[in-house]
Length: 181
Image 1: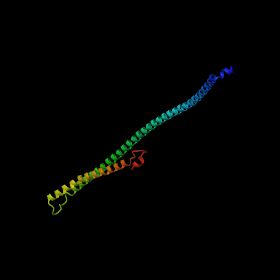
Image 2 (image 1 turned 90 degrees about the horizontal axis):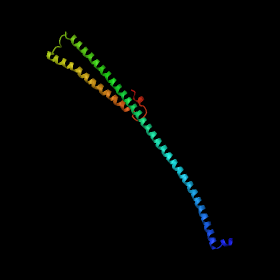
Image 3 (image 1 turned 135 degrees about the vertical axis):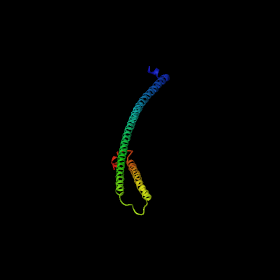
């Protein structure tokens, strides 16, 4: 019986079966290799997706933290600016009140001096018209001096305000220590 199978058709059948077995084995090995590669690529894909999700979450968290820091900084700067404005306004008003009070005292003292000298003899050589012009000029000097003083105070306080605003750190840590005068 083996002789019957060993004819050329039997040998060809065995050869074909052998070749098919080898091809099937190679195909199985290739399938296993591709399956391992596919699993590895799938694992890498999932890792990449997880890394991307982490990056997105970190970026959003950083953006939220930056927005919160910007808001806190803006509120701090606004509070410091209000404090500078209030301090400047208070100092300005106090200096104006002091200057006006001194001007009022000078006006009262000048009026008292004019009344006390009213009974004295006039200065020889001055006509009544000339004394009137001199008195009128003296009366106008006080309001002009007060106006000039008020403007000087205003400019001085404006300069202080600008310097204080310029010292204010708008971009970061509290500048309160550098703003204090």
